[in-house]
Image (cartoon, rainbow, N blue to C red; front, side, top):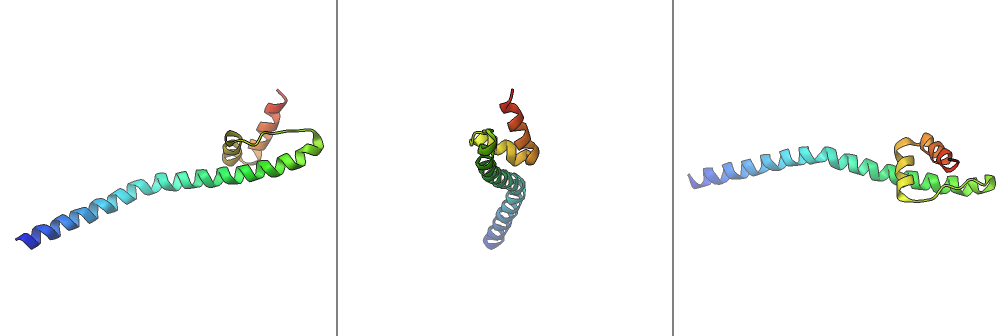
Length: 86
């Protein structure tokens, strides 16, 4: 009987672990995608700022702008440029 209870406890622990991994995988995937898009947005802002110097347009390189460009892409850059002129 002792072996049976140990096996049942072990099986319940494995099942709980599987459920926990399933629950946490979606938010971790979302966080990873957000961080990757933010990094790409930062690089795009850096390149845009380099070429925008020739046209006297300046967009700051900060985390908020990188997140905006990461979420919106090219429309995000256009939004930031338009906000500079307001």
